[in-house]
Image (cartoon, rainbow, N blue to C red; front, side, top):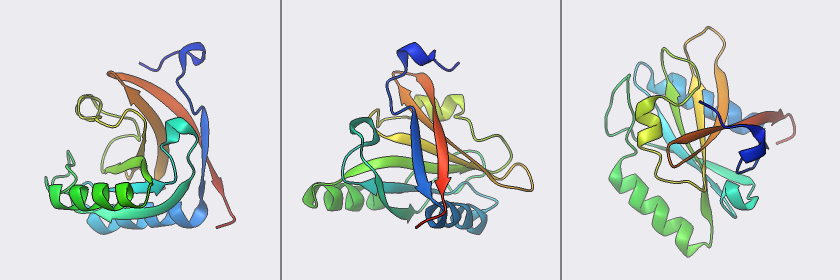
Length: 151
């Protein structure tokens, strides 16, 4: 259950470019019927006020419509690249193929990046839905997501 606004760890809202949102949706559709996954890279983690710089799709090692696992080789490569460039994981992104854009119990249990956001793209309805969350110590915090038309 989402925490009250009083105990929200922040950020309370974030903005993504329309181009980045389209890239996330396109990757989700391309990987369907399996869940897609990837990382949004930033100058700082979302928890520290970072802003999204670039989207990097990754392979889903689970190759499943019910769960995702960022391929360990992709994760290692991105971890090294971001460390060397003094950047950070701003968001961990994956899709839900038949359920809402809300973290599942499995997603919550596997949320290993408390300073990052967790973005979900849902393909459950005809129109894709996107939602952002912070997951800290098993607690889910909703983050308002707006889309900026300017890239």
